[in-house]
Amino acid sequence: MTQKALITGITGMVGSHLCDYLLENTDWDIHGVCRWRSPMDNVSHLLERANKKDRVFFEYADLNDQTSLITALQNTKPDFIFHLAAQSYPQTSFTAPIDTLNTNILGTARLLESAHLIMQGDKNYKPIIHVCASSEVFGKIPAAKKPETGIHEECPFHPASPYAISKVGTDLLGRYYAEAYNMTVMTTRMFTHTGPRRGDVFHESTFAKQIAMIEKGLIEPVVKVGNLKSLRTYADVRDAVRAYYMLVTHNPIAGEYYNIGGSYTCEVGDTLNTLISFSPMKDKIKIETDPERLRPIDADLQVPDCRKFKAHTGWEPQIPYEKTMEDLLNYWRERIAKGERFLQR
Figure 1: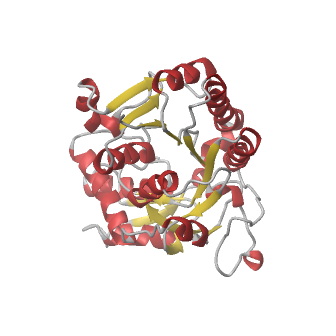
Figure 2 (figure 1 turned 120 degrees about the vertical axis):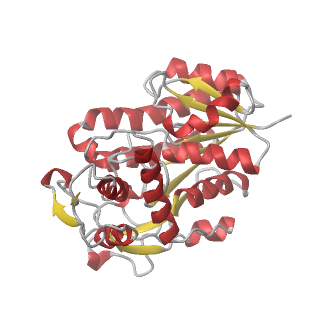
């Protein structure tokens, strides 16, 4: 019998790339959870397959409605559940903390409780579940306390935003359901990952979008920025989804939790300079700090120690940082060339 995967948040950057990876590298059927109003831009290339019911199926459900989650799980009985859906933008969490906490913490609880209830009714049903937390749980680590090898799994949580707090709850819920109910739930704390389809609210993507708009003459040659001193380690989203596949297929251990991230570390300002270097307008582009892009507090030392996950699965990042950034810039160039219009954010 064909195995099935269910992806919450399939219409996001990571969810859509995960679906692409699974279609290419497995024979699984892919069921993507989305809301009726979810933007379909990132999965537009999958719609023909979905219309033909060719391995891609959309299940309408909402993390804030447990009945819809129970229905989606009961109808599909997936072998693998990838829980990626979230209110994922830290900056927004400062102005919408309640929505962020509700969606990310209670939404995760609703999903896991729904799976638990179905498992109680069917003792033969034992899905493998991946709960996606975030490196933001580690928050603002003083330089003097940062481990020399990077942030490892046992570093204390010090969340620096309501989003990060919500992901602490997500992280702990995954481990709780594994320990309390013998469910095969594993949690990941993925560090910064990006590439094509990255939302334009995230720093490297808004840089790329602004540069592409400058090249088309749509805005003045000024890139607006927030904190350029924050240190980030970048992974390509296509490497990230390969890691998620390996997580659930390489001897999954209930209750385990892993840090996952890329191998290229630099300041956000260096990322901006890399993107500008790809542009024929590079000598004309100026940089301007926009106070609205600054967080009240920033997680500014995001450097991972991924030895635990690599030792368990053999995963290594494969896509070079420069290709990731160039592909991201080209993604925005292609969208703008089609005549799409965007908010300047």
